[in-house]
Length: 235
Image 1: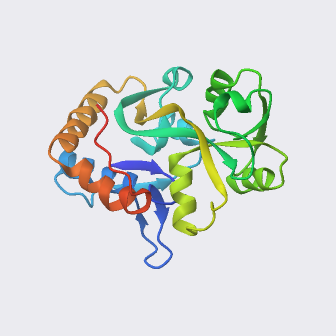
Image 2: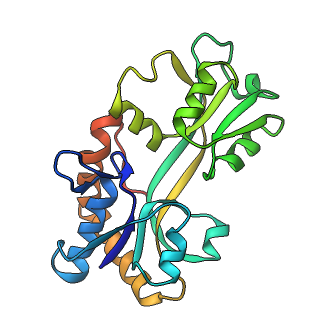
């Protein structure tokens, strides 16, 4: 089984600097799927991908699956087939503690930062149609803009927040969330379009992993230790 994934997303798919092995939620899930499909979890080969080449890798059959926090949306469904949802990521707006923003209404007509190459733009447009959106190439540049008051809020999903907390628990001191989750992003496992048997098998196995408690074990091991948030498998 050849699986495309990232090597730089803490707690989902990243290269452990001590062991030089990939680990995280997506990696453990890939091992569990491989075990069910081939009888041996070690029979998986990971290929490192990025956001710009992941779909082409599927189309060119360089990988069998993409397991890399890929949000299911209509645009991507024209290019790949998705499994059932395996993780739901919440999106929220981060502001500075010393700013007078306490609801979404307070952020109307304000400057809102969004990380480029994400699905957050549509979420912000829907929640704050009059806001001015500013795109940033990285999370760090977005945070810098927020710290320097170039923007009034930064749209961030819980996956990125977990990564920050893992690096430095004090990194986000002085900031808070406003307005609750403005949207939920469903992550799916991508397969090449038309591979119906593979997709059916992946969905069957994914449901088994959810039902028998392995999804919960994978979540608790990789995510709950950082987030301190309990979660159940998405239906």
